Amino acid sequence: MQKILVARPIFPDVIERLKQYFDVDWHQGDVLSAEELTRRLADKDGALTAGDPVGAAALAAAPRLRVVSNMAVGYNNFDMAAFNASNVLGTNTPDVLNESTADFGWALMMAAARRIAESEHWLRAGKWQKWSYDGFLGTDICGATLGVIGMGRIGQALARRAKGFNMQVIYHNRSRVAPEIEAELNAEYASKQDLLKRADHVVLVLPYTKENHHTIGAAELAQMKPTATLTNIARGGIVDDAALVEALRTKQIAAAGLDVYEGEPNLNPALLSVPNVVLTPHIASATEATRRAMANLAADNLIAALGEGPRAGRPPNPINPEVIGKARS
Ligand code: GLV
Image 1: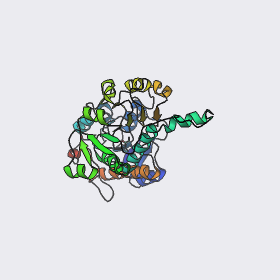
Image 2 (image 1 turned 45 degrees about the vertical axis):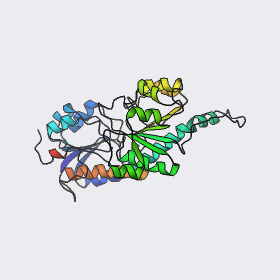
Image 3 (image 1 turned 30 degrees about the vertical axis):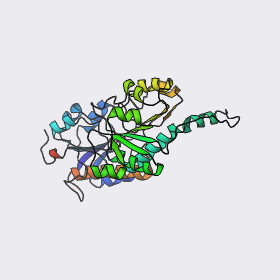
Image 4 (image 1 turned 180 degrees about the vertical axis):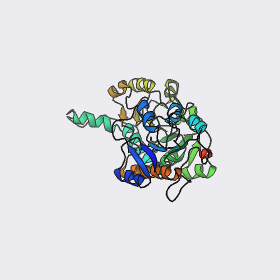
């Protein structure tokens, strides 16, 4: 039987599925260190990860390894140049999380705009004495301008929801989406600068790449409206968190919603003392149904990539399909 590592705790029934095909080394404790992950990968044919960094050193130390299946749509934890150089396949779990993640983007944006978390903390602290006309005034969503940066599948699902709120949608993306998608979403392409100036609510849904590092920093925050909100459901590092803290403290922008952070789970401690930011622990895809779908898709990818099951040799979501069928190097 081929050997696989499952580097994280996941649904036990998915482990049972994997055991039908593989000898499974299931790590259920704290996140594996880079050294421990490398050691556990050394004798494996495949692995299932969830955000764990996998680079050249780990691949070099695992000569049998042919596939690493990430239980996430984002795969910035994979050094794809090293995967390609070694002919190791990477896979991810797109699509199944689009709607849950878009829902969550809205939840976070609305919580920031309407100061839900901030007012709840205040209420829980026993500070509510009387109704007041100017208590926790926020920014409207309905009729406002939504600015989506990153118009991929999740960005489109997010923009689609804006119709019900009668919003104007502007977006920025590496390249324009097809005219029929723009028409369906009633979305207008804008330069980043134009979007930052015009949007009442900016939501980030772009993948993390070196080029996207600090897409939003001090200069970009300075272009936004003082009433605007910023929501990041994409990846830590796309926003300069220190610059954001400053912009929130000085009310350069009204509020923010963050689900992802630079250096998570060790986020910038200054964020914890800023009231006008809603903080969640990287849970945008976290519904029972979606996380199950992601785990099963990650398993499908692994099973198929290692030549087993009904899709043997044809994993549904290869990131670098060009290495399929090539010998390990
Ligand atoms: C979660 O962050 C994902 O990339 O799926």
